[in-house]
Length: 391
Ligand SMILES: Cc1ncc(COP(=O)(O)O)c(C=O)c1O
Image (cartoon, rainbow, N blue to C red; front, side, top):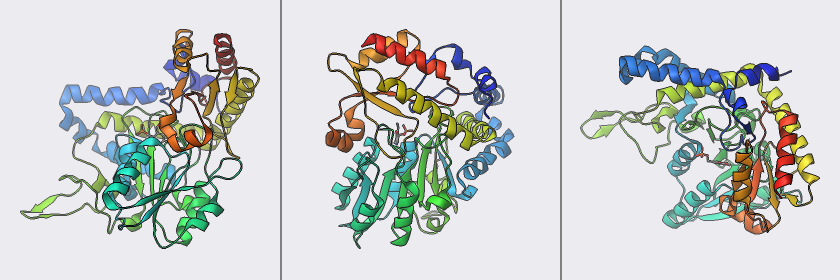
């Protein structure tokens, strides 16, 4: 059982507002804030390089913390400033022959899709969308039927930014493995919300962010690269950290995934990310997942009773992100602002964030609510009541 009272006492943001937007950027625990402040203070006292040297053992341990969290080895982890940078590093490094096909999910995130478009234009690739089943979940049988010798990459979002959907990351991994196709998994919204085991999923690359369900600071993320790639994969951009300059005309790539990193970083924020992961592990990811599911269902059920609201969630398995639309005479942006004035943080998502899915389902701008385990049923009840009063 999660000790909610203790967790709430350790979360200073609880007293400020009712935050129901973990899919945006959730509330950090005080311990995470403390670690960031401590390192920043040390930098102020000693100087940044000196603080890094003093804390180097702890900073190096963050790779182990991240690795253990997802069932990887620490040499397979690169720390990044967000999920997109992590994802892009893997995507742009992948050699894809002219004429190759990229297979992706219907609700793929805009940042990923524009990168597909750029490489499609530059490298003569095609992008093919994997159809969903009747529930809206990515259909792994349809995926398998699409495989041919031209498929160079399967890149999907495990949990899309809206739609409540959980795609079958493991089922996709089975197909990728069977046909030996590189598999890049966007786990941005999954990290901190549910268990991640890269060995079960069998992905080659996985990207995630710190600030959402992991409760870490903004400006943090990580990339997992399966060891088997480390012998060959060359980052699209390098510097002398990831690839030391060893002779006048020679650089040598680092042997680990940190070849994707650069020399300068925010060590305070990295320390915060490590602390956030430890905090989640101490509670237990399965317990977190269970509570997020429970609160999300409660939230969805309450919203479904309001007549001016249309729930827009799909999928046979649903996550902690709840998306809904409101009648046309109400402006979603104004609702978010008015909710904020009333002390509730909820969010918006434009159709452009997941354009393929939005066009297919004719989605307007949606409102999003995403309770985390630190929220209570009472908070959700009050928030939904407030939304209903505004419509
Ligand atoms: C599914 C998904 N992928 C990627 C991202 C991008 O993450 P970041 O902003 O950390 O780069 C988001 C952000 O909302 C997302 O929802």
